Amino acid sequence: MKTFVAKPATIEKKWLVVDADGQTLGRLSTVVADALRGKRKVTYTPNIDTGDFVVVVNAEKIVVTGKKLDEKMYWRHSGYPGGIKGESLKNLLARRPEEVVRRAVKGMLPHNRLGAAQLRKLKIYTGPEHPHVAQHPAPLAIKE
Image (cartoon, rainbow, N blue to C red; front, side):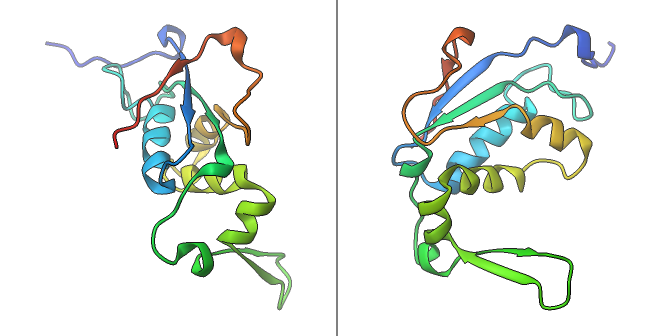
């Protein structure tokens, strides 16, 4: 019996849509990251991008548990001495809610070129509408 290895030319990539309304950030991110990597498919190959395109709508309506809204910080550094800046989850969620979801999913993908290619297949929108209707995205169910 031979081991199956997916080839980039034979991979079928679908479009999936996820409604983030009322979903917990971490649980939503794990489902989205698995779909982007292709782990939901039987043709999954770790070193090949076998994942689907994922559209996340209603990103501003995600929820977090505990005191994360006030205590979780997102840090960035300019590269200069003393150039570190932080922003709380509450502020970032009010300012750019799609960035909160993007950072959560990015941390669950491989940290290399393959992960960057998989992250490019993630489309996040704040409202219920998205411009990918022509691709006929199928709904992606998230367990409660």
